[in-house]
Length: 79
Ligand SMILES: [Zn+2]
Image (cartoon, rainbow, N blue to C red):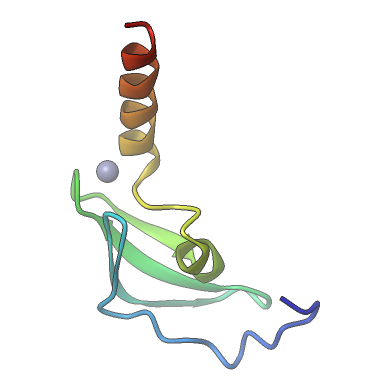
């Protein structure tokens, strides 16, 4: 992506499901990045997530669920 991509031309993500995130609504822009309010489909927690992270698939669930998943993977590797 080019430097200085105009985030004011945001791509709407409302209502989309990305990984376990359900995008609830647009939370606003911090000047550079757009943020969305998302609900984690695993535990129901609501977080504000950066739009670029959602679109890239860099986040698919909340930090707690991610930690639980990583823990489960590391346990599996032992066997
Ligand atoms: Zn969660």
